[in-house]
Amino acid sequence: MLHDIFARRYEETPLRESFEQRDSRLLVQAFRILAEDMYPYYQNGKKDDYGAAFWAGLQNSLSRELGLKELSPLWIGSYQNIMVQVCENWMLQPVNGSPDIHIKERLSLIELGFRTRGNEIAAMNAAPISSIERTIGALTNRAPRLPGNSEEGARAWRKQKTDAYRACVDELNTRFLQARYPLNYHNGFIQISTDDLVQQEVETPFWSLISSKKWENVDTDMKEALDRRDSNGRDPAFYAARALESTIKIISDTKKLTHGKEKGAHNYIENLASKANAFILPWEGECLKHFFTNVRNPFGHGAGSAEMPSLSPAQAAWAIEFSMSWIKSLIARL
Image (tube, rainbow, N blue to C red; front, top):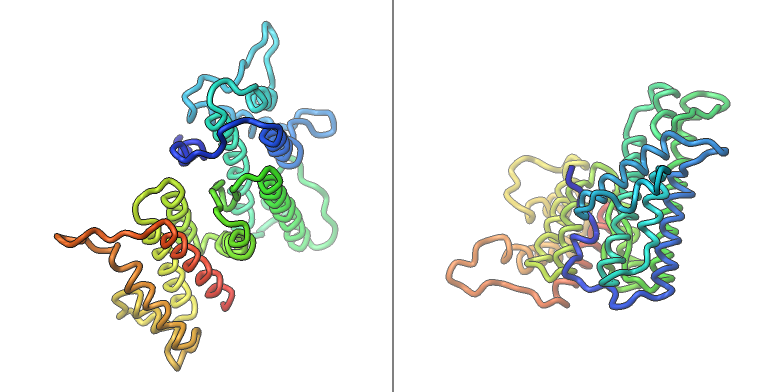
């Protein structure tokens, strides 16, 4: 099975030229979040089957993506290493070659681990609470005893697991800041964040708002926009605008404003900005239309014999931040 990993996405984007104490500290801290808070290999002195299965899967997945038979030796003489130790030995190996590649590959292990947990949490929260046993079985091989009504207990248990995962995400992103890494983990991916204030005020609440299944297309297109921005790829603003358009369409559908005769983004914006619906004000509608006319549309059609449209890096960054801010604002009004 193929996995999208940080090291491949940012292969051409320099992250670190050297390996310092802050780099070593970050890798140890990030690994401990996985090994101690999210997937401990032992529980109460005994092997935990759930944790063991996770580390075996993580080792197999990442070693394949990196083109390795194993991350570190599975056997030392006649002794077989447990999989969490195989991963830890590799994670903490001294740098042998490019510090940049070394760090990116190890951040890929963290990314895959967090993505696995995030997918489990999302599946758990999306499943109906039809029985306490089914809910409890989603994230552990031992069902805890919950007092009172079984459905209330299941909801409380889900919230506990979800809050614990979010606390791990918050800690990882804080560790990135402490290590002065321009990175942020959200919704399954570690991506580059270029501005601390924008990350705090726009990006972090943005990713939180679109974390549910409903906004999956928005999430996918915005991640593509950031990847293209960070790798100097073509037309990152186009994908940010696609994410914004998807948001507008989803809200139009959710509010039952869609009438079926829409031909493009402008018509969906009119659904939200009309006097009768007044989900946004007329001037806001005009602002959004102007963005699609002048930023999205030129990139959505072939240029023919005319000059190929392009945006400067600063303009592309603005278009992404504009789209994120509007998506955040529109969803907050629901």
